[in-house]
Image 1 (cartoon, rainbow, N blue to C red):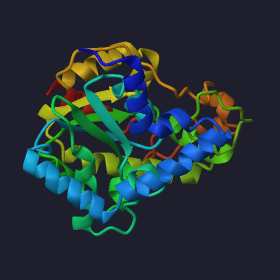
Image 2 (cartoon, rainbow, N blue to C red):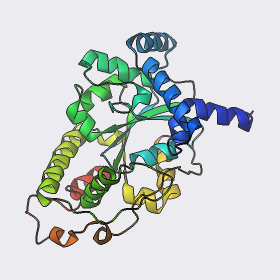
Image 3 (spheres, helix red, strand yellow):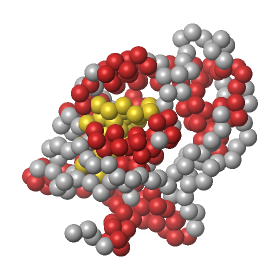
Length: 301
């Protein structure tokens, strides 16, 4: 029997308060934020994580049914998490390796074994529920743990690889978020065109290329589903139908609280857009996804 809508709403408010309150700056939202921050500290404490994982192991609640979102910064991972949480059989966490994301505890400075316990505690689940989380490439690059470690720890979870085809769009989104201070919102952001440094972009692109190749090499092609930011924003229900099918679930309608912040072409976002023509860029830098042929081969496999 389906639970009353009041119970479902209360459950969602308790489970993911930041999703509902992060865009409101009123007194209730601030109070809710501090409550969530306090709960996050408890949730991220060693004693809590040790106790919950020990109990889950006895009950067999950590063995399978896990998935990970592997993405990069500003590639639509928050949107994908929102869409996944629309399904009644999915509980998807946010950035569990982000040291600034206080709702999930602070992994900064954790040694490898402590970090494993931190990660494992987020995959305790109820029967008939899939649990996932998002991991960003730069977090793996900076943490004391590798993707291989995660795959072993979580019993070979299914992997949803989310990437943005236009890396210059990704970089522009990152710089606009830093410029405006708005990373996610339910309203479009307003900003004048900004200037970005070509040298900084090349360094960013080269690091992205390295991190993606290192992480893709760790994946088994049979347990991976690839989706692009462009697919997710242009045809969300069709893209999510394929994602749910990959996870072995029936499809459902999806919606999100976040919107695209800067819905302009690159020429309207960058004051020095003309400096980023393909003929102007160094040969070893990238304007698009650096390995489209590799991705297509993996998809085909």
